[in-house]
Picture 1 (tube, helix red, strand yellow):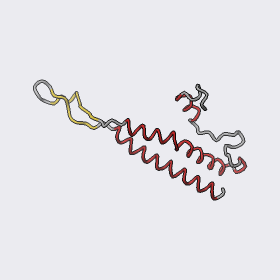
Picture 2 (cartoon, one colour):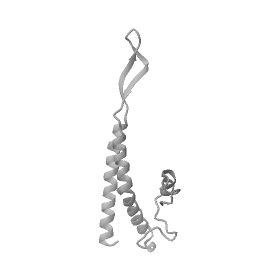
Picture 3 (cartoon, one colour):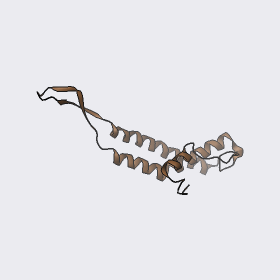
Picture 4 (cartoon, rainbow, N blue to C red):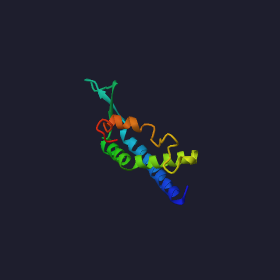
Length: 122
C-alpha cells in the first residue's frame, strides 16, 4: 500500500471505531429502568405489575444512523478494499478480487430493505 492509501485506511478505521463507541453509548439510552411496582387498591405494591421508564432514545438512534449513512458506509468500503487488497494483492487498488466484489456482506440486503434497490438508487 502506498502511504496515502494507508493513511486513508487508518482514518476510515478510526472513524468506524469512533462510530461504534458512540453507537454503544447511544444504546445505553435504550435501557428500561425499573421504578417499582403498581399499587393495589389497598396501597401495597403489586409485584406482578412492575413499572419501568426509559428516556426516549429516538434522537440518539437517528444520530448514529445518520452518521452511518453519511460516513461509515464509505469508510467500511475503504477498509474492506484495503483488507481484500492485502489478502489478494493482484486484485488491484479497487479490491474485490477477480469477481469484482468489494461489496459489504449485507449491502445488497440493506438496499432491498430500505427501498433503494426497488427505486433504482443502488
